[in-house]
Amino acid sequence: MFNIICTTDPISGKDLKDISKLPHVIEGSGNGNLTIYFESEATRKAYLDIPVQRPATEHRLNLDNPTEVFIDEG
Image 1: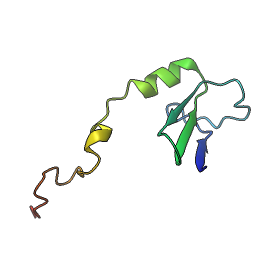
Image 2: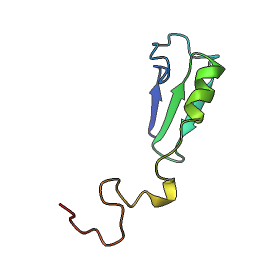
Image 3: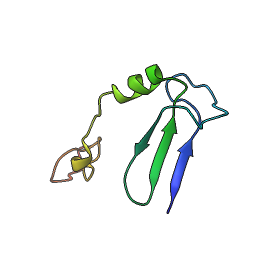
């Protein structure tokens, strides 16, 4: 199983040393999970409150050309 562990709090930018009791979030499922650790429950909540630009169900579309037709608009 492939799992990436991030020990830098993405909200505070602080490098975390002892992660054994810190709050965390697991992004993804199955192989290829990303476990993100936070220095506090407050920074974990701030991370979870960030709005998502595209739900996972729409991952087949990119942000530059979010159409079904995939026409070069340049």
